[in-house]
Length: 426
Image 1 (tube, rainbow, N blue to C red):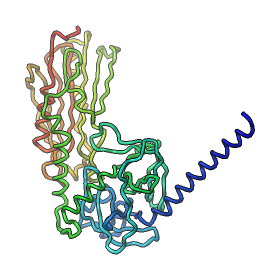
Image 2: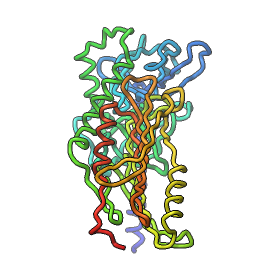
Image 3: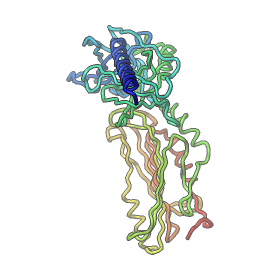
Image 4: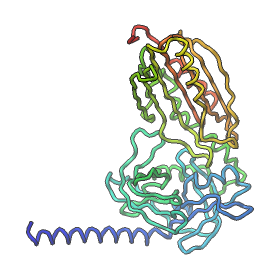
């Protein structure tokens, strides 16, 4: 390549780099007065219970994440909120409304209003450069350059995929396009430059709801827990009701059939092993929802997980095979993110039952969440016991559903299990 051509390419690259730096500097300078650190403080000690970021929108309201301020919702008598602005000034914040499903909250500053960020009317093109701002690790305001990759496909809760490094403390901060308009709200990270944003359209929707509800004159005695309960109930109608209303799709495991992928919101995978020194072969299939709803640090909800295992043997014999199935059942326990402070102990029933003409041993468990009414976790474990040389083992975990939805889901799950001797590959 001629020397002049190399020089031109290097010069163009330098100019491009300088343009990127200039844009980042412009974003930081223009937007920093609009971005706050949001602090949730313990009333007794004055220490931080949690912290994140927030930003001003029209009306002088401050947007942040629900998970940043959840202590105010569930323990308002023990906590209060403050902001810290770009000039290191501090003041009070009042919670007025939230969207627990989409992890958003709207607050009002008691004495300071910064410049409002405009919400972009249209999302950027995939591959566009965007800028996320916030207060990582309590280190002060920072800006992170990243790439906009659009909405994740088939997600139960809409999220934008950002290639960039969000860090703890940046939750609730704004993500901006080239015009410094809001395209999303920092919400989560997966590591290795994989991060997620709440789409800006949900900020607009929350602001509209706030206007309709007259939250500018909010009654501070409002029952925020009841509001959480109502929002979770509506969400279940959105993602569970369409699934429960119809028979479950099924997959084959040997001569058995069982629940397969129920919607695009589930991630499913499977594997098969051949006989070895254990003297049996097995096939497995697992599905789970990839997202959850944050209630508190020790209580995540709104998830569905199930898995099946098919076992076949020609060597063990009936007695040893049943003993193996019994031991296998005893290794599985109900587990969810909610600890004993947030949920009761599981209450379980065990029985031998007949389902769709199949004899099976069934364990069914339920527990209630303490902080939200009509919110339960369901756990179901079963193994078929009708065949001497093959069996289907299955486990279902529903976290954070109403009692009615949990019972209906379990019924559909059991209805999907069947056995067809014509399909037996023995």
